[in-house]
Amino acid sequence: MAKNYFYIILFVLFTSLTASAQEGKDLGFYPNPVSTGKIYITSKTAMDKEVTIFNVLGKQVLQQTVSKELSISSLSPGVYIVKIREGEATVTRKLIIK
Image (cartoon, rainbow, N blue to C red):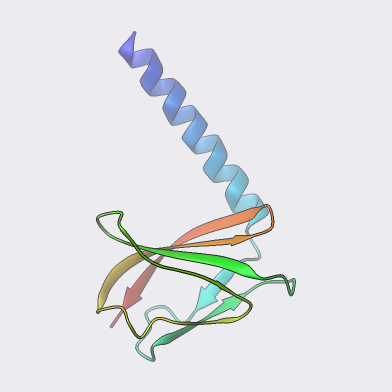
């Protein structure tokens, strides 16, 4: 029984990630790795983006609504997870800060 739940959860996660990748394929950021203290959000629209950054333990360390540029100078060097949301599109990427 627990095995079935595992497969159902795995299926739901996979389909939601695939849908997010299709919706957010135009969303992204650069540079990565970053050493300048700023990242630039790329998109085909001019809508505001909600950017949330998590550390590797899953703790939210930064959340901000921006249009193109985000200052990350307050973050320590390391590896982070960036979630960018624009309208219905969402994309999640790894960020490395030197």
